Image 1 (cartoon, rainbow over the protein chains, first blue to last red):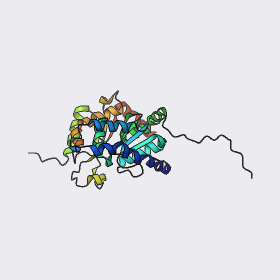
Image 2 (image 1 turned 90 degrees about the horizontal axis):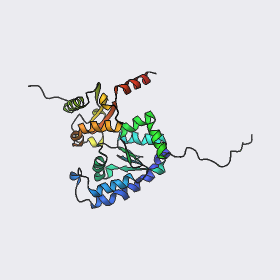
Image 3 (image 1 turned 90 degrees about the vertical axis):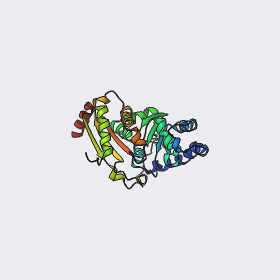
Image 4 (image 1 turned 180 degrees about the horizontal axis):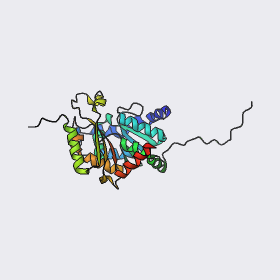
Length: 162
Length: 108
């Protein structure tokens, strides 16, 4: 579990900076107008959603979630065995434009939000429910985003002496 | 004249959901006190920020979870967008048949 979160974190820092820093720097209008999703915000979110097969918009980072629902979502992704290489998290607390924009983009008023292969899956309750029912495992299996379960070794293990 | 309600948000949620979904069972839990110390709640005086709704309704028949949640969010759109309004809304949305099935499973 801790391995998962650690390796996740490494994939986390950069996408936040690259996908969103440019737009937030050039954004002229403050979040007052965030209800009208601008083309530049929409484009940046398009890019964020497509940045990995599994994308979570959350509060905080996988290692330091800032909200219980974001934490629970990260834990479910870990339990499901999502491949860290196929996962990116975006911290909405780092970018007000993203935080407001993603709500409108998904027509979903709360964070966290999960996307799989660019398709919106749902928020924390939906993840929990799908985790319990087995639907989430099916979805991840079909999307081919699970980490390989075992390193397949080429040589059979030789019996050890004594 | 009736006294102002101590739970205006809860009343509003109850009214809107009941009107829209005619639920068979409907429970509202106010979990705000559990989250009052969280950083985003600094300066928020409302005691009605975190709710958990358990709704069983025929209206959910044939709808995926996402659509069910979305329909409830849309009932409370302004309250959720509002500063100091509803900060978190946990939802359990089931049809009567689903509820029965799950209750049975829980008893096993």
